[in-house]
Image 1 (cartoon, rainbow, N blue to C red):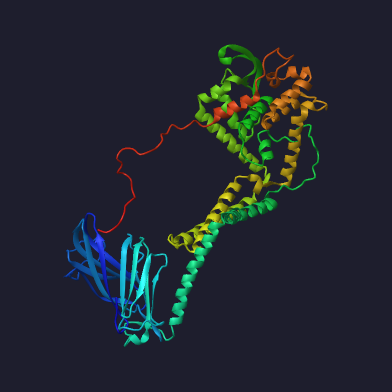
Image 2 (cartoon, rainbow, N blue to C red; image 1 turned 180 degrees about the horizontal axis):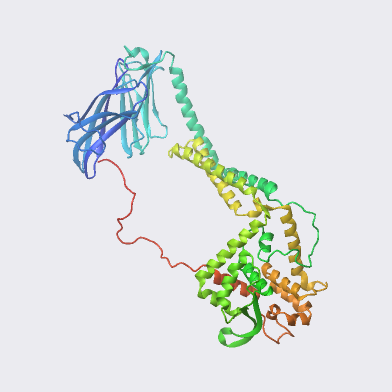
Length: 593
């Protein structure tokens, strides 16, 4: 660069390309700010001067030895054409740069990127020279800086010019050379921008401030690395603290159950006519159900007469067929189809009707028969679960306003994470990170961690959902009834007096998953005449230990229904690399041409 007496710069760039393969074009994009312009463009190679007038489109064809220059958005593009094939070539690009120099009342400031940050390849060696309009003394008003500080480089100040050298410049890394010299070295300012103020002190302060900022950033980053425990604690507090505070507030305001004044320990009878499939979800404060509710619904339909059960015994092999035992079983047949059904009970009847058919089937055969048409039965089971959820919603047991607050919190943290990470990563300098960029990235990661925590909290319905006052009272009464069924075998209270109540005990015990406790209580307390009248209680052993049929475990029956009603596994294949490909879209690449 030669600084002219009017403040303009005559620039000559010598760029060496190391080509690997055939190439035919290259370009230089030079950004221009307000008040800046470039003219007198020439391109050459050694003693050869290229001819102007060539196509300036990137990737275009042009005759070797030609070039063109054209304005682009916020800059100028210089394109030249040649013919190279696996060789090293050095090109000369020359131009006049007007408006880059800023003439203050005391000094002239020439601040130029001698290597831009848009180059996609690393640079092995960079040298730059800035020639003064005339020689001058090495005074305080004549200074030179190179930047950024993390680039391995040196600057040298001579009476007639200043030099910059740098090595190992990474891809997309700019190198800046800044020269300040006395205003008296110019004879005019026609090629410079003029500012009527003193600039030296401000320029020096700015450079010193930039150096101090770099050192301060490095000290803060080193301090964070040296005190990893403290840094980890800060990140933990920022990454989980806000989410935990929001979760606590949501639980206190929206999720915490309100007291109803109910104080009974036991309910000796079912407190309402709520169907057995709906009670466990109410106690869990959910709308999802499983095989226990399905089994309880089946036994409730037997109890209500939709199906007839006949006590039978089934021979079952054990110990790999070495022994056999008689199991108390029930033969089910369709009975009274006029029994009123809830919407969620109809899918259960479709499953059972398909299994029992006209001849009836034993409970021990149900699992195999359900699996014979697993796809259709799993669809019916899915319908059962959806209808139960709808029935629960119809009862208006729950208030779910807290979920909206959690959702808003998740959205805020996600947006914050995206913005903070974009700002931090976009400006991040891997060679010399700024503390502000490190903080932005750390805050973005913490915001993302808070969002993940709130998403996980959204799966915990008790955090953001509570029951209505009526729903809470009913849940407390059903909880007291469940405690009664659980503790009943050891209680010395009078047993139920009717068979209907005993059978309701068993149905709800199945729904609660404590059927064996109910059966145990019945074995201890049920009058023999009632036991003999019940078909449901045939599945419990009678008489002394070691005599009579073995009990059919309702827990095993329920788990068998669950596995049989599960959707069939898909038979799709895996993945991996295969064949030659060639049919996919996207991809691509870029570079010189």
